[in-house]
Length: 329
Ligand code: ACO
Image 1: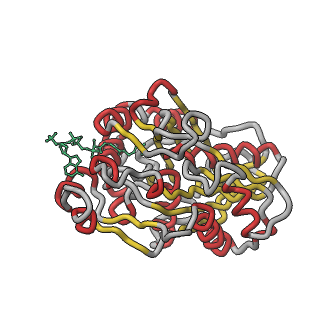
Image 2: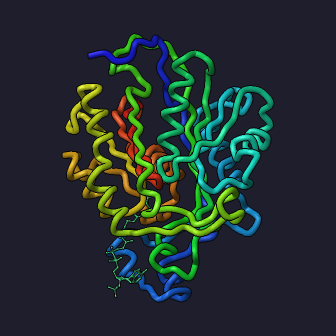
């Protein structure tokens, strides 16, 4: 079976990530709000999260992840002509975080922009970059998920503050000729969905136009949980259907790192064996758009993900938004 008519395919050249130096453990949190390591770990699988230092912004985290990905790819910043940053916590209302990272990398050509799909931001950005590269308009994309959710958390709300952390991850994609065979490296298929009727279940209660404030994250946890497990797997099934690849053929499932129970239940529902699931949520909590590339970086660095492997990315976020990307690594 072959897919896509275009002779170009987006091939992953490298990934990288960055976590701020400061960690906040569950025990640390128990000194701030009425919670415990047991409660947090049992329900979410999270042990700790990283918190950006004062003055350390989303673009600074993104730049560090980008430099790590460039080093892994053996490239220099000038090789990049497209930067897409998935973030819901930009440094500024404008200009975009992507242009700040572009400037920090001293790149003065090409295009850079942000993409806002909350926790699905990285998968949305990968899908967007892939379409740019496949069209032939750009040659090499730097795709970043970077967040400082610690800045929009209500630190007095124990139902949300225990879940999130800061971090960044990045991936370099290059347009390469392809015959369309699924044995060739590159992104095989992407599937994006959204349903804007669910704002109340997961939102930030501030914004430049509505309140002229930044606001805080608000969530109906049980409702998000139900949606994440009940609905989101459809985009993974769509990726299997579009390619004819089966869960048994998949080497790695790298889902959004929000909650270990959501990750395990989703994999089980999809028929993906537990040993193929990459889970790093215990190390950094939910870092929104940064979570998928953070998990990817860990699994590439420790040698699990190897060239030629079939890797399924999946994410779900506020909106709701959700999506998948199936990659021949
Ligand atoms: N520590 C101790 N107790 C707590 C805490 C806490 N941090 N938070 C809530 N509780 C209490 C509640 O007050 C409640 O007490 P009560 O029974 O006396 O009223 C009890 O624990 C149970 O609360 P629930 O909300 O029913 O707990 P639940 O089992 O649903 O777990 C959780 C809550 C972990 C948030 C779960 O609903 C969940 O994981 N939801 C998914 C949310 C998620 O992953 N969001 C990520 C963002 S979405 C995304 O990334 C797309």
